[in-house]
Image (cartoon, rainbow, N blue to C red; front, side, top):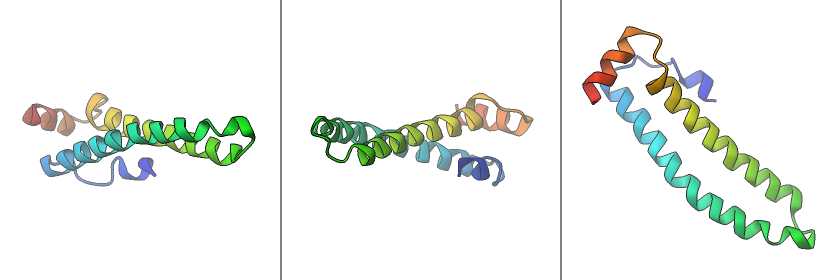
Length: 91
């Protein structure tokens, strides 16, 4: 889970770049998954795979929440001076 990853590593420049790449990859994955959900959702009106498609949608929502949380924790809500320094050096 994201909670375990948040403060696991030392926050050096390499780590911050890696986190940025993970966030970017998750964002890129999110859009096609939404398209797939919309296609799948059209068959629920026939009573086909309703629970599975809802689970798929919830997983997409969890992915979005996770990468937003990761971004928020590591870039928007710094609680230690080291994070602020790294943000300045990456700007």
